[in-house]
Image 1 (cartoon, helix red, strand yellow):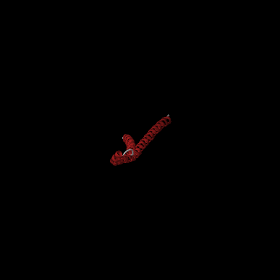
Image 2 (image 1 turned 180 degrees about the vertical axis):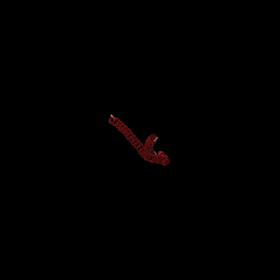
Image 3 (image 1 turned 90 degrees about the horizontal axis):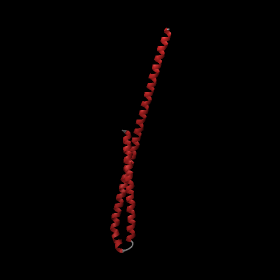
Image 4 (image 1 turned 135 degrees about the vertical axis):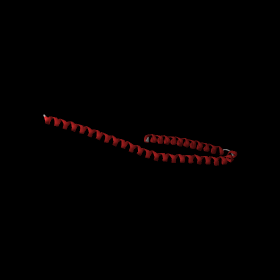
Length: 130
């Protein structure tokens, strides 16, 4: 179960990183469009007048995308912390399993030694009777 949770968290982080890459691409495209509109605005008076309204809207869109990227980064950081915790839990669980296997191995070896001791005692008893 701990491994499944860890894998689920890793997938969620991967999804967030894909969302971030998509948002960064949108921001890059937006900035490219703004530069293009600025170049057009420099050509004539009417374009320059229209650019003022466009620039305000473009700035709002840029802030929105940057805010989205910030939220994604915060979620990625939260997921990384959870992944670290889940990884620690998985490691603890694996260590407990290792310790249990070691205890079972020691117990099996002890039973085997006890059986060998018992057989040796029986043989010693039989040979002393002869």
